[in-house]
Length: 436
Image 1 (cartoon, rainbow, N blue to C red):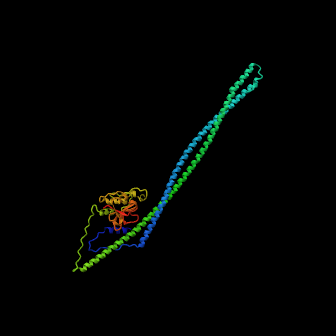
Image 2 (tube, rainbow, N blue to C red):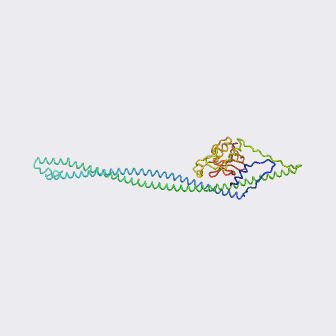
Image 3 (cartoon, rainbow, N blue to C red):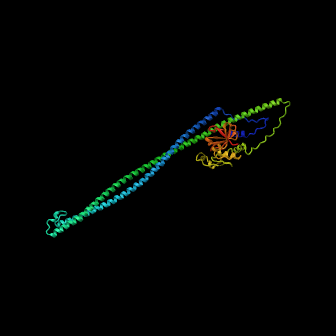
């Protein structure tokens, strides 16, 4: 590749001598066969197809990864919901236990009060029986020995019915109510325990679902990364294949140029021989005068080309380059970062065009798509030296400066440098842009 690039530079910078002098044709350059060029193109096409296949797979894998990311986010929210529900259920269970404990204490107190009242009533009844009366019976009035005794027994019955028996009824009723409250509290406790158990199970299920989703996400991310790595490797092989076939095609171009130069030399030699034969007296050829080298004008195409050619060998740096020259690149989050473009000084494709045309007072934006629309469109077949060539929709993928003769100067891609190369017609826009 180095020998080929040097031969292109020599061919581009060679200065033609005056007509009538011998053309110094160099030895013929290598001429690769059609089979070699065809095999190189076939290999590049195979690699390109493989890149396309891997790109499709990567798109599917990244779409699946996006779905899994959404699934993980949803599972995380469900896990949060389960934790909130569990805390609420635990709070309800704690409150139900407190209510059940309070009801049990009240029921026990009510039961004790009933037992105490019964004991007091039993003692009172026993005492009244010893006095010859039966509590709560009309027979208590029989056997009274005097009106005073009968009055005493009536007062006794009244006291028992209005105080002890009524109090006993109240205590029994209170005990029943407290028992009902205790039963309700226990039922609420059972329900709260069930809710807590369900919430605890829901939390375990949510945590397990979240863990499963995260694991699936990690696996898909690893699979997507593996496909991306595979694609990067194949893209590298594609670049190598393209470089190889471009080198072969460049050698063919150089060989054809050599043939044209050789043909012109033979024609010139034949013309000189005919003139010498027809002349009455042979004259020694006059020493050729040096061809003056005319500096390109400030607004000329050659100024633009010269500025671009001065940058041959400057490394590619994505986002690099401006009107003054190469600059530090910027991060692209991908291939450029992997090659260190963001901390390296260089040009990207549109940055090189900015610098080249700034020499004639044309200041282009740092985007090939805008540069494509910056001048007059000419059909690709009519492209001239100094026109810009573009690739991709709207010219937004790549731009290069046409040198004529099927050659161009460009800042191609990360990991490479500014170079001269044969024009690549795959994906090229059908129009060139002319600014001068």
